[in-house]
Image (cartoon, rainbow, N blue to C red; front, side, top):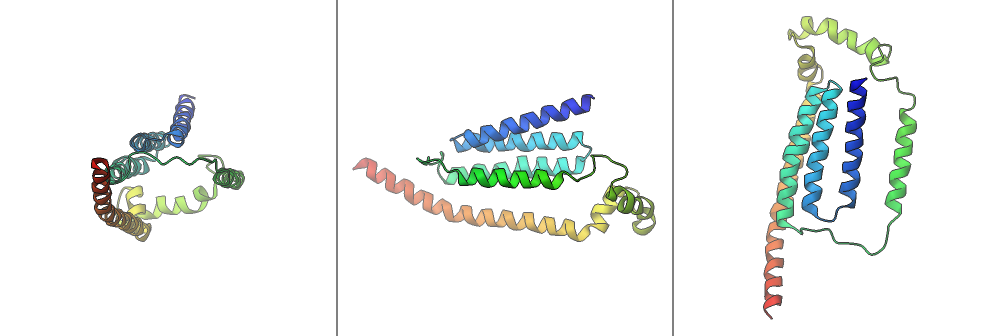
Length: 190
């Protein structure tokens, strides 16, 4: 019962943080609230006993992403440019995609259901055979390092490529930002 209340409280804080992010104009505040959102997500993953995912979310979502976004803000504008008219197409797309996702998850088994297909077919094989096949006593480690080794390597490559891409974008923006600042200073002096 207490776990359910904690999960509901964390979900409520996630939703509140998401709405605050959408409504905010100052990009620094958006970045900070994005870090808060990632930490709340990490806490939710801990309550769901997914500590490895929680650690990754805290490190990448709250740590690295926040630093990269702060670096981007330092090289670009500090506030969002406001648009005069409301755009309802993005809202409509979000509502439709959300409805499709809710519809798609309606047939999923309940959380922790021992009769779910993953618990009947794949999990017993991992639990019984991993020590003999991999010779690693920790089942989670054997799954991530061996059974899903290529997947883990692919995820690492994607994160590395994204980081390199962000660094390349930032290096191009820094020169342009300096030129724009110099032009603004010249205009103010005139």
